[in-house]
Amino acid sequence: MRKLNLLIKRFFDIIVSSIGIIICALFWLVIVILIKILMPGPVFFKQDRVGKKFKVFSVLKFRTMRVDQDAEKNFKIEKDKERITFLGNILRRTKLDETPQLINVLKGDMSLVGPRPTVQQRVDEYPEYQRKRLSMRPGMTGLAQTRGNVLLSWPRRIQYDCEYVERFTVFLDLQILINTVGVILLGEEKYISEKDLSSYKNPVYDNVRK
Image (cartoon, rainbow, N blue to C red; front, side, top):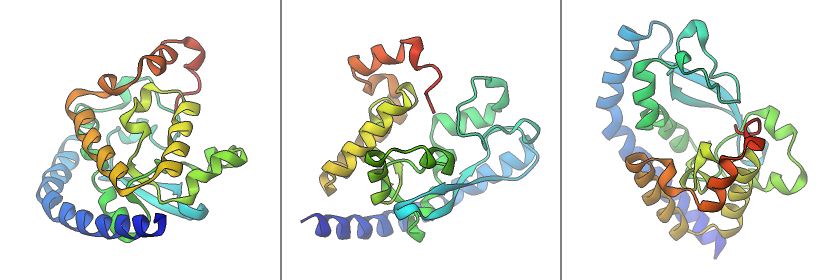
């Protein structure tokens, strides 16, 4: 049954990513022009991430930071909001900066849904049980992204990723995709549980968030 679900998942990825690329093409053209005008420098931000079975690939995003202060190469979130441009804030809030990853999905490096791809430094620190995240293609969105995302501690996000791998079905993917739309429209705070929210407010977690 799991093999059938994985087969359907890949077929769905190919169809949706192909349609998505066609639909997004015009938006991408506008974004490229705006970045070139407002944020001189490269249009795309590329970074090596670790995917299924430890395969390394380059993940694509629209650049959202100034070139001279580009902290996106760091796997930690920078609290200095001045690094992100006005346009970058809009792209991040609407998740449009992530849409070039549809190309990664079509190529087979990623899936629409799955654990978010991680930098090598994080993977090197994984204990054995966390490596199950790498048994599936990384996703543009995932269970953790619809349960609080950056409001969660890094260990909690890992737990949600492992839970996704264990519980995976096509129906779970559809639920996550629907919830992702809700996150974009309503914000991550609306989808975080009270338990996770209390952990987020605990200063102990300040230095473990991705």
